[in-house]
Image 1 (cartoon, rainbow, N blue to C red):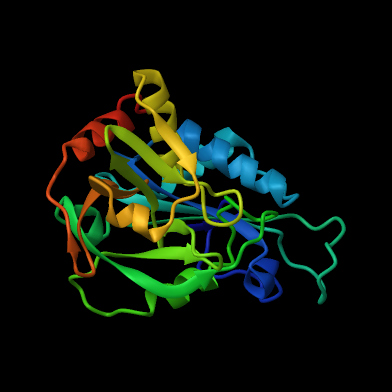
Image 2: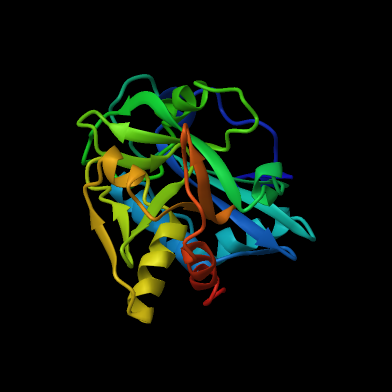
Length: 267
């Protein structure tokens, strides 16, 4: 089911700025038994991204009700998109136009139930650095589309992306965490990339547990020298990278720890 501004629909206005310019934000979240997983974190991130782009964020209770309306009875995925709505041509922000609110659902994707150990590759595409948009899950995801088009081998689960300075940012659809010598590290997303809810929850959980999870600039050599390489997002949880191109790793014990931490305060 798809709801557009609260009504069942399968289309939006052809002049919608989300379509014309990618002018909007979105969240993709897991649902269980018709309820959104990690709702407080998901809504908080949506609201923060809306504020960053000067979009009016929908009321929390209204949005949760709509997510529950479209959610499957079992496990599934819900997607929320907020655009600036329909407007006249041109980049100038429209005056007095209402945002478009889209809520839709889909079955749990196959990759959400993939083996715990995954195969990844380095992408050749380099992410542009734009601090104004860094961390925001905005609708313009052409870099991710082009990066994902670099492979069609079903055995490859994910691609790792660097920015134009050579720093590792994360996966095409995931955030990155590595373990080295008893410490955890995740890339600094102050220049580009998406700060996902799973990453936020891991940062909070590790602080609560007293386990260092450091944010900083990571280069490819640091990834290759890691004891364990992990990827996370709200749909797949935490997955261990068993192979990255020609490099392989054996388990170092961190993946189950992070998965437990990820789900310890479910709401």
